[in-house]
Length: 437
Image 1 (cartoon, rainbow, N blue to C red):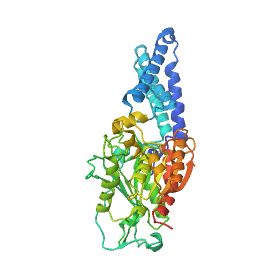
Image 2: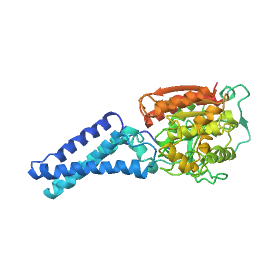
Image 3: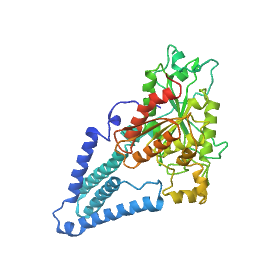
Image 4: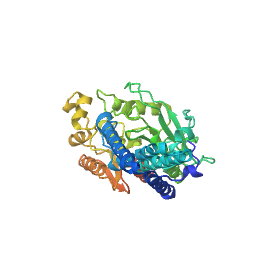
């Protein structure tokens, strides 16, 4: 994927001068919309706009949290606040329009847009999903390359007990950067209909002889998309930076689809909802090895993810340990959920608690040991919800005999944390999967 770094499209909108300028201009615009010398404005129109904005915000929160319920967690309070501010600006402008001439109407409209932009960007700053305008526009600006599926006759494999890097010699003319492609991975065994995956192939994959690289299956959160790790997570740049220090070597990364849609929730399980575990534990690995030349075996195959995807990674590692020998859990939950434990058991397993316990990772780790599994846990230092849950799962993994590491990075439950976690754990990933020593 080509995301050239240059110009205003690459200026940060979640930190620094642009973010603060938009915040300042937004507040100035809101104050300008709120102030008037008209008595009717202060006695009728202004309070009506404020009450209406508050009511609409409350209805939005109720709709999202109680009716629609696209994800298990309620909207954070600061997100609700900024949603209310984003609504208040256009409402104030609308209540002023009848008393303004065309120039004033234009100014009010522009001010409303500024307030709306400020509110939406403050919500974005909470999640940090779109750090730049280029990332926001990635579906239109970015492009992928055709996936390299051809196989070469000569390959380089890691000898027993040694890393791949120890026997790899990069040929002249190796590309400086890897490639990102899309690929449809069919649910041949599961019947699951996943969205197209994204496949990162490092520079060394283009060489002949070709090194047999380890594979990382990486999962996004919920709501989310396979493209999230590529766009918001800066996947290619992270892996290219690692490859630049290791003679073009980096893991192959496949961002598979665990949800089926942006707001879907399959729980990453085989249940009444979908056969998502079969898809991720059988269909995805089968497709990878059929279409790419890679290292094989559980030791060279890792699964990882963020938030919901981190929970999925733990689930797949303990329910399909013959496939995934290691996992990366970034800010994951302590159990898969549709919102509440009872709702999860009822919808996914028809109320059968034993069926849920059979695949729930904490229950699995309580009754089974995994001495041959390696795990890394990372969470945001300021994440008061998922930090404790991640530590709970880590404690269970230790008791189950896994080889584990755990750490935190500055931030909450946002893409700043997720990106930093992936970049920080890439050396661990490479060592754990046999790429480096």
